[in-house]
Image (cartoon, rainbow over all chains, first blue to last red):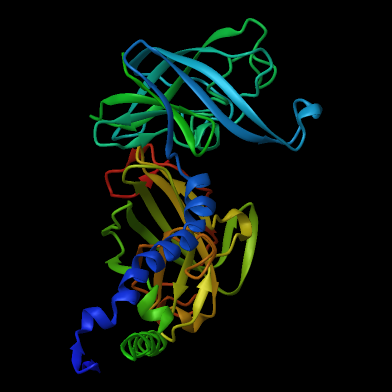
Length: 209
Length: 197
């Protein structure tokens, strides 16, 4: 079809020019209205924000917000708190035996798996909350091992950010301390990075030394 | 000027004609059988055994309202930790039976890439549900229509059951209570193909 104006036919593009101009704006508006899914469903549930990275032997600075319920410090109850921790990977090496724990589900390395010990040096202001700490090994193809921290640890090691004899999950008064944790990977898979996080969405990456 | 409203109307009509559950947001079903590895992309699943009895024994002994179907399965995630839950047993009449947590049976677990995770799903179903029963499960939780459902692929595993497996019938009934255990890593693989924790 074509419209006739003043004896001249107007082409389809001219007749719909206004709507064609509006179309990109409509698409943009639709994308913005859809983006609540990104903010509410994807961002808080995935490790998507690399806060910092460090090469082999370097120190990465983790900074991420969390909603404090005041269990450790009642004065922080129901507030957003920025948690800052410096982390350095001292060593990542394969091990044969597994750490002993009364809460362990297994006491030997499963068939088809390998065990790796990760030694870390951490630094944070004394009293910094270290709950929900996660230390992960990432292989060259992006496979993540150890996601979920102590919650999904069949070795029953507890929080990988705090020393074994620590009375609570808070940064010690010394301000700098070392920890070790063991993670399982598929046999034959060599980790290339250590990821360090306290839950989605923030994490830092450190190259394996 | 009529073109845009006509296009919108046609698109709206088309969407309303398409079945929402079976076409628009239906998962990708990947079939399998007992003993086969089902590759779901995000994980591999193997149903290692299917047992039928009137009782299960885990945290105490539980008596079935109908019969218990216990499905032993092993998960291994591909590249990241995932939650797998919402297992359903679908019978030949399309009735959907949710897994039960009675007697220590688990209804969900976590699959990781580092090792294989064993779980026993327990279903208390009417005896006539055994015939042609299939297990449906994938990542996500609370069943196929549940919240946080992210089943881009769903395993549909034929359990190979028939009415001859109903306890009390002559053939195939397991008289003793079925022992069930909570989810745990598979440490050793037995030479007979069964998984030992």
